[in-house]
Image (cartoon, rainbow, N blue to C red; front, top):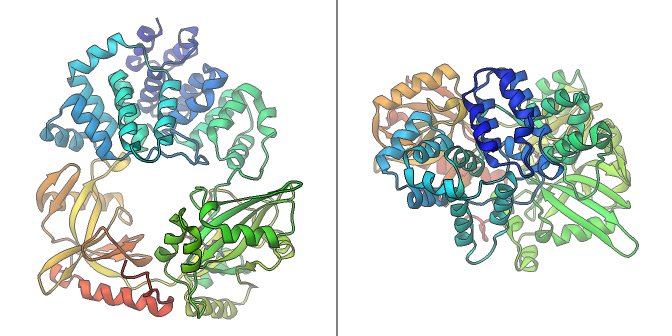
Length: 601
Ligand code: AMP
């Protein structure tokens, strides 16, 4: 009954008509078909007005049952799971491609052609489905997918672990695609690859909730910030109203998105932005952790989350013990940086530390091999009292009171440029990345990268590299070759060795221009990757040179970004792989040596 009505939505021109249809009882079936979500997503994509997009989303959400609202909201913004969830689909393009080959048998030429046309995986799959009579036939006889079907299959895929899990994941996914209509397949694929591209973000969803229900936007935002789950916020808002959102509080074991820092040129710049005074903290190049603690009568529970909110408690039992023994609170949320240091106190490279974080078996062995130290820098909740709205200075004072013998990140509050500069030099000298300047009166803003926290780093020498291949972009950049494979030259063999990829640093006009140049230099295209004659030179900035098992050079640039196009330079002037190796080695003069185990792995 609903299908016939809903398919009309896509072709409808009139916005009020679309909205009316969504609000109508026709779509309020006991279980909402996934097709409705796909149709609404298409309608949102086809509408340029922000308010109209919000109204379409609002109308869709208003029609969902209490059990569907959370997942419906998440799926609409292209997330299979909330950001705070530990679940991931862990399926790559290879798995998706395998299923496509089995179900649709596309030729390589057709795939390449469709990719070049849209650069959007969902759109490619949609086109393949339209061309494949077989699939459409089968979907006519199966029960339609509901949004709950899709969500529970995604959950099963994420939960499939251990031996045979890849096969189980692929079987589940194949079953989903077999039941899907062309448009449903498009949106399942988009969810799988995490690239929604309908012009509807989590931020717009917050506004849509506020607008549809006439609830203050700040209240919606705050609830989202505290829960980290926009799906839950949507359910509360639509089914419990403002009151439901007001009840949301920060609590232990619900990790909070970490606050981030914007970049400052140097300490002078940081002081200026912070109106003359700032709290400078050492910027330790370790791994960020958020530690949640709650004590009950006979038991203390502690969980540790990484920067990406993955739980890492199991690999850090020594820190659990330390915090449990030292922190004198009944419940709290702490933040800090975990560092692995050599005997002289110098930090080991980040990559080396990561081996410790990934380890969940034989942890004891790893504790001995890679000992770590915790340096705390923030306190976000203290015995049930939320501190994120308190000024930085107050939080730091409280942290100093409750942290016992746990180290705090070294800090200097100053308005004196030369003192700040000496502190920066001291940080670099000690092998750290630089400083983080924090505004004294700043509140903690989860998930935000604002100017209240500023990172000041020592810039690395830039490299002149050559582009050896480029990938078609996605989303807004889909018409450009916008992800560049960067290489240095080995003068002995004349070969170019890849050191990394980047899509950062160019303006739209430069993307446009370079795409043309690259296409003129094209050797071949495979999938979305165009190999080119190595002619175009770029000056590249980066944070660090890391070891890489992926590239033949054995090295990769961390956070590479293009500083300038260097049409004035010839590829023969590209930096040599030997020079990059020297820079890599010199990094270790600042860092502790890891030659025991680290560098030869
Ligand atoms: P970046 O990754 O360059 O954006 O810098 C932000 C990261 O610096 C944070 O996520 C932390 O892991 C790290 N960091 C190191 N020291 C500090 C500090 N004192 N305060 C805040 N973040 C720090």
